[in-house]
Amino acid sequence: MYFKRKAYDRLLEWKKQHAGKYSILLDGARRVGKSTIAEEFARREYRSYILIDFANASAAVMACFSDIQDPDMFFLRLQAVTGVQLFENESAIIFDEIQLFPPARQAIKYLVKDGRYHYIETGSLISIKKNVKDILIPSEEMKLSVYPMDYEEFLWACGKNTYGIIRSLYEKGRSVGQQINRTLMRDFRIYMAVGGMPQAVEAYVNGKSFAEIDTVKRSIIALYEDDFKRIDPSGRISAMYRSVPAQLARGLRRYRVSGATGKQKTNLDDERLYDLADSKTVLLSYNSTDPQVMLSASKDFDSYKMYLADTGLFVTLLFIDRPETENDIYAKMLSDKLPANLGYLYENAMAQMIAASDRELYYHTWEKENSTHYYEIDFLLTDHAKIKAVEVKSSGVGKHESLTRFKEKYSGFVRDCFVFSQKDIQKSGGLIYLPIYMAPAFLEKQENSGTE
Image 1 (tube, rainbow, N blue to C red):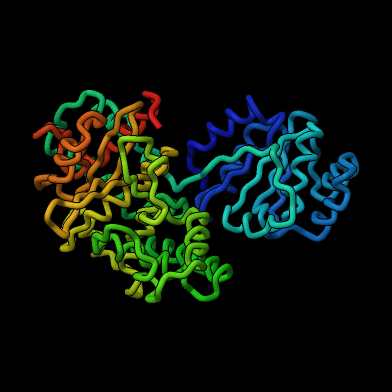
Image 2 (image 1 turned 30 degrees about the vertical axis):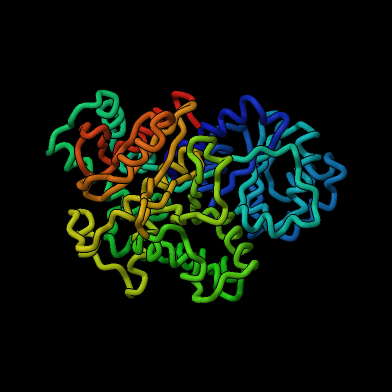
C-alpha cells in the first residue's frame, strides 16, 4: 500500500531544478518508507526506471559495475540484465540500500556527469558511514531526510481531511469548544498510539487490532536492535535506545549513558551515541546554555535529551517488558485513562513533530536560586531575532513557573511562550495555550514566516 508522502513533492522539486547536476539520497531510519517513495516517484514521473536493490541484487547486476568507467557499456549491460529500456532524459535509476555496495555510491559522480539519466539513492546513514571509509563521497549528491509519517500524512492515510480544519482553527485563534477538542484530541492520541511507521499505519488502516499493530512495531524495534548489535556487539547501543522512555519518565535534566548501560561512560560511548543518532531512530535535543544568542552557537554537546523518532514505537517500548501490549492498554491511552503521568509521551510527540519540520531540537535549563532544583523549558524555537518557548504537558494544568521565569529572565529576547497540552485554545497569565494536535499547524506557520 502506498501512502501520500510529503517527500514526494520534494522529489518533484529536485527533478525540476537539480536532477541534471545532482543525484538525490533519501536517508532516514529503516522502515520509514524511503524505498517505497523512491519507486513510486520513478514509476509515476519517468518513462522507465531501473531499481537496483543492493540487498538482493544478482551477481549479473553487480558485475555491471565493473564497466562503470565506460558508461555506454555499463548502460547496455544494465538494460540487458534487467530487461528495462532506458530513455535519455526520461528514465531514472534507483540505487536502493546503496550503503551495502559503496562502489555504486562512488560511481554517482561519473554517472551524474554523464547526464543521460537521473539517479535516486536510498540508504541508512549509519550504515553508509560505516561503509564509505575508503571511497570518494560524491559532491554531486543532494540529501533528503525521510521521517516517519507526520500527523498530516497519517490523516491522509486514514482518509480524513481534518488537518485543513485544524489549520483554520489555529489561524482563527479562538476556542474550538469542548466537544470538538475532545474529538480532535482522540484522533491525535490514535496517531501517538499507532505512530508514523508505514507498516504500522497500514495495519491500522486495514482494521487490525492494536495488539496486532503492536506486533508490527515490535518487529521494527527488533530490526533496529539487530542493526545496533551488528555495529556494537556489546549491546550498549541497544541499551541506550531502550532506555529512552525510562529516562524521560524520570524527568532527568539530561540523558545519562550510564543510566542505560549501568557502567561508567567512556570515550567509546560517545561514538556509540553518534552511531545511534546517525541511525535516525532517535532524536537528540541539546541544551542551549544562552538562548540570547543563536541556539546552535550555545549548544552544549555534553548536555542533551534523547527522544524516539517515532512516538508509536515509544509507546511500544514503554511496555516492551510484556509479551505484547494488550488492547486494553491502548484503549485506556486513547481515552486518556492510563494511570501514569504521560507528559513525557506528549513531549516525545512534540519532539517528533519539530524534527519532521526539519528543525534541530533545543531546550534550556537553569538553576533555581538557593535551591537544588532547576527550571526547564522543553523546547526553544527561533523567530527571526526572537525566541519562542514551548512547554508540553499531558493535562495543561499547573503554574508553568519555568515559562514565567524564562520570560522574565530573557524579556528582551522572548516573543511568546506556549503550553501544548490537551486543553483548548486560550490565553492566560501571558501564556498561550494550544492543544497539541495544533502543533503541526503552529510549526508550519513558523516555517512560512521564515524562522529557523
